[in-house]
Length: 317
Image (tube, rainbow, N blue to C red; front, top):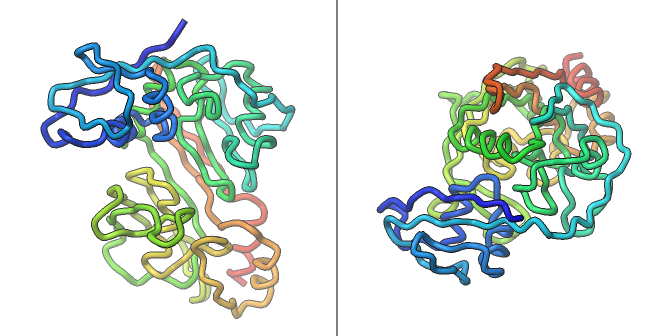
């Protein structure tokens, strides 16, 4: 038995856009690569009953698309008995506090030790909407970012949570230790974010291409002038958004191996601690949302992890 999803109807503003781009923008629970695969395997048809076989198909105003999600995909990801810090769980969803250093799902050479491996062991069943590599995954945190995440255990919860992310009704706050102290005002960053023109593994603020990205932040503490503790709030969810925006305003996140500037800290204790850290000092501290099935208002808050807290205390001294 297959599962079926329906896309929104194409509005005039999106006419003549590529089908894979349109669906990736409006179906937050499916990645663009997953959409391309579904198109190429004849799993998507328009409201005229035509099977669309090319990702570059130019969509028309008034069209909508039916997506058939195969149930017979082979799941090669092995469940692993990896401890999880579970903050909340019922039959519909699970909320966990992800440690830094854990990838959310298998990708490339990483096939074990991921959050998905752990969840498959812990939950037995997850929503299938994310495809065989990302079952249940509604949103992601970078491997080096710690903090609160929600994962869907059934398709109804997955679709509803994805819509909340798309509608920006989730409360998402992050703590970041950054170089220097921002002086800019207002504390709102709105840019386009797209692939870096020279390094396709990185994201960057772009001028014409890319997706709109909005972050706001406040300075929680000035750490003796050479660093600061910032609280970021996400209003959109672009890849590496906070890391890119922090770099864009000249206050990269400490420890960030991709976007961080290797500035020398004058505080010797903090400098030594930073040498032992291989990931960005970024933590998803608050996640709040309305339960997609019961309507209960849920909010979860987790303090910064031990390595980040130690660096913070050293910077204060």
